[in-house]
Each structure stands twice: as C-alpha cells, then as structure tokens.
Image (cartoon, rainbow over all chains, first blue to last red; front, side):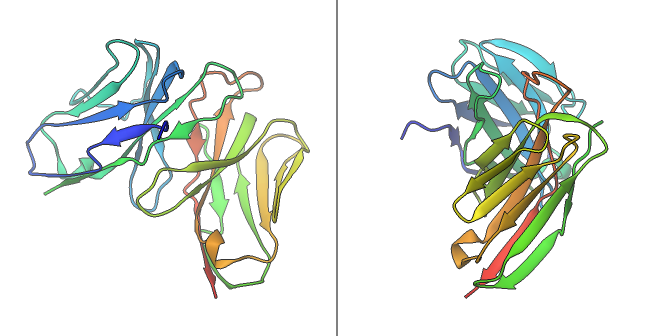
Length: 114
Length: 115
C-alpha cells in the first residue's frame, strides 16, 4: 500500500501524559499537512511542511503541540501534557507541489485523553 | 477567517431517492473540493472544481461551483446505501493559485441511505 500511513491508529492516554503520532506520506509528495477533527466537525488545519520546512502553523497549535519533519519524509506530531480537550482524530495528508494536486489523507490517529 | 457552511447537517433518505447538499460561504475560493469520509477513516477526495460555474459529473454525482466561486452543491441521483457517509466540502483560499492548500473545511453533511 503506497498511501499515507499514520500510527498509532488509536491512542488512549491519561491527562498530563505526552503522546506522539507519526505520519509517513506518499514518497514523492513534498508537502505534508496535519489536521485535527473533533466529533461533528470538519477537519481543522494545524500545520504544514514543504520538505523539511514548517511553513505555517495555526493558532490552534498551542505551545504544547510540536510537529517535525526532520528529513523531509515522515513527520511526527507531539502533544505534551495532554488535556481532555485534545481528544480528537489527528489527520495527516500529503500532496505534490502542483497547485491543483490532490490532497491524500491518511486514516488518522484517534486520541482519547482520560 | 474563511468559513464554509454546509446544509443540511444530517440527511436520511431511502434508496433510489435524489438529494442535494450545499456548501456556502461569503468568501471567494480559488478552488473547492468535495470529500467523502467513512467512520474511522480519513477523507477521500471526490472532485475539485476550479472555475466559476463549473459543473463536473462523476457517475451519479454532479458537482457545481457557483459563478462567484463562493458556493457549491453536490447532487446525487438514485442514491444507494453505499453512498452513506460524511460529505465534506473544503475551500482553498484566495482568488488565484491557492497553492498552499490550507483548506478550510465545512462541518459536513452526514448522509444515510436506507435500503
């Protein structure tokens, strides 16, 4: 399968713990995006990378959130000191740099903070 | 902040019926996309519309982009149970390019097609 891969698919953690999600994009895609989706809502933009450079961050991304894409391939999203409000589906997507290039989403990582 | 409002929020119909869902905004988008999402999965792109007034057909699905590029509609003919899912519209900002593709999503229309 050469699609966008995310893991873990599900994570249950206690409030205050740190969690990390990983995204492996489609190999030839240089742009990578993180979105967050809560129940009953559409995905909300968090941040995006072009190669290894993080070009934009949403105000939704508090200082407890950090994303990296060290070699311009896979990306990680870390949440420190998790809060119950962080419970959501975290979606990764990738695409080429062509303006009308399709955005391919992974299956998401669902976080539940108890 | 560019907002996209989708209506209806929920739709439950019988197999064989037709339906239309709407996506509206006060902002102009350089392009607009429709996605379908199943529970526990990521969204899957159905179509991208770029030109104002554009109409695209995908089998039983017809997508239209408004002339002013502020709104769009999705019409499904003879709906089938396999069409069940969350339909999301998403807009790329601006009047041209939109190359950063920071999409703004609507909240979605949850469609249930009963056999």
